Amino acid sequence: MRTILQDTILTQRKILVDLLKQPLSKLVLKLATDITNTVKLEAALHEAFPVFQHCKYLYIMDNNGIQITQTILAHSSESRSLGRDRSKRPYMLHDFSVDDFSLSEAYISKHNKRPSVTAIHVIKDHQNTLIGYLGVDYDLRELPGTNHLYKENYKWQQIKGDPAIRSGLFAQQRMQSDMDNHLENVFALMQALICEHGVFHGKFHFSSSRTTIWLFDDPYNYRLLSMNELNDPDICLAYPRHPYSELAQVPEAAIPKIFEYFQQLRFADEIIYLRAGSINVVNGMISLNFSCDGSHYLPYQEFLNKGMGFWFGTEEIDPFQYDELIEIICGKGCEFVYKLIKQHRQGNKVEELSNIPHVEQDKIVKELETIMQVYSHTN
Image (tube, rainbow, N blue to C red; front, top):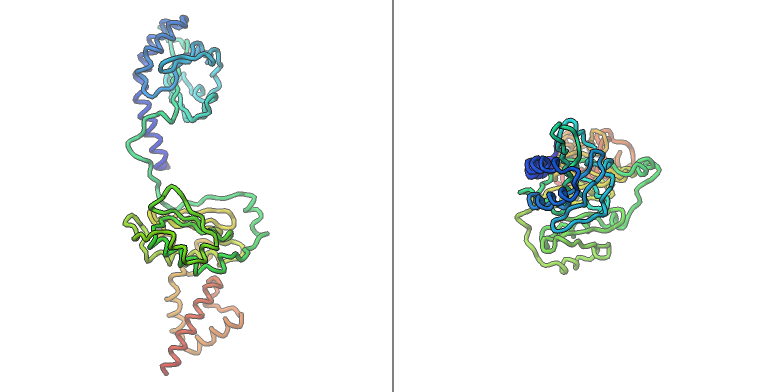
C-alpha cells in the first residue's frame, strides 16, 4: 500500500520525467552523429544545457559506462571525471535493453556527497546499436518543488526499538523517579502551560524527570524543564499569557484525561511501563515510548479509546469506563461492597477487579469507600 509520502515522491519524479524525456530524446539523435568527436560532443552539451532546467551536470559515456567528455556545467566544464568508470553507479543498473530512458532513485553523489538523482538516456547509431549514454545529474536541493507540502497521514503507527533493550526487558524494573513522586503537580503545570501559556507540544521524560516544550510564539526552539522548574509554579510567569489556540485539534477538556492515561501506563506494570510520552495539540497526536523501547504514535481520540488491554495484551476494562463497574458492584448490595473493600485492603485477590491494574484497583476501592460513607450518613 502506497503512503502519502510515497505519492509525494512519485509526483516529484513525474515532474522531472516530464521535463526531461522529450528533450533528451532529441539531443541523443544529434549526439549519435558525433560520438567519436569529443570537441563536438562537449559543444553540443554546452548548447543544450539551458534546455535542462535545474540540471547540475551533463556528460557522455561510452557503451561500457566510461565517461568520454568533460562534465559540463551551466557556465563551465571540469575534467576531473574524464575517463571515470560509472558503470557500477546506481543510475547505470537499469536494464536499458528494455527502456532507453531511466530516472534513478535518489542516491548520495560520490564527489559532493549530496542527495542526487540522475537521468540516463541511451545513445544509439542508425543501426540501433548502443554506442553510449547521456547522463544528466540533479542535486535534490535544486529541483523544482511540488505545488504542495507533504502532509503526514496521522494514524496509529508502532515502531520497534533497540533489539538489545528488548532482549533484556525482563532483567529490568521500573525505578521510581523524581517526576513519579510529583506527577500530579507536573501534569497540572503542563496543563496550565498548554491551555494558558501557548505551549502546543509537550513531552514528558518520566524516567529522567524532565520535560521539553514548544511554544506557538517560538516554534523553532524548544525549552527543557528540569524538576527544579517543574516543581515551581512560578515558571508560568516566564511565559506570556496565550489563549488556547484555534489551531488546536485536542479539546482542552481532553488534556487531563490524556495525562491521567499517561499515569496509568507509567505505573500499570513494573517491567513494561511508559518511559516517555508527548502530546501535540495542533496535530492531535500522542507519542509513547515504553521500557521495551517500542514507540507508538496515534491520534488522541484513538489513544483515549484504547483500554489498558490494548497495551498489555489483556482484556482489562478501559480506565475511563470504571463508573460502569462501580455501579455493577454497588448493585450487589452493601454487604458485598464492604466485603470487597475489606478483601482489597487485606491484600487479597478480588475477583471483580482481577483484570485491572493495581493502581486502578486502589482508585476504584477509594471511590467505593466514598460511596459507602455517603450511604451510611443518609441512613
